[in-house]
Length: 142
Image (cartoon, rainbow, N blue to C red; front, top):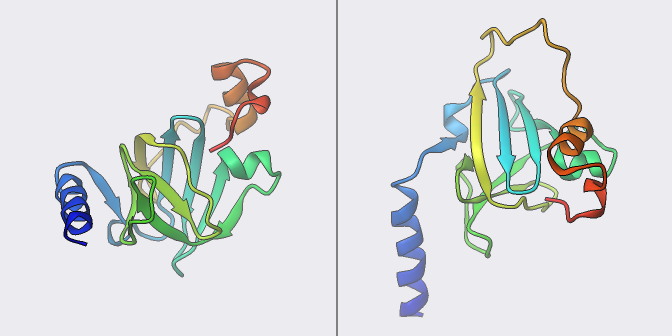
């Protein structure tokens, strides 16, 4: 048991040294763009602890945008930080228990900030095909 505690403590200490987006940092209407090793997710924050999530696994299942909670971030095991929405190097776990691959980049767009509106919205399947080729659907999701 002592070895497990040391491992968990070491992981928590490491978390203090990386940039994170905490649930308390977000306001209703904020958006996140999260790039993982395998996918791109867009998340819109609602005021009731739920989020509209598109991209990645949700696009593959044909259920984007899905409105659900975010459980937190993990290192890939059973230890989860429930107060974190995203952190580079960690994996995001959604309320439906889907876990992403490691997060590479996180972009926060505050509600009310201008986004380049003259560009057409990009569809996740088009982005994936551009990045990974036309047979990207045959590779693993997440």
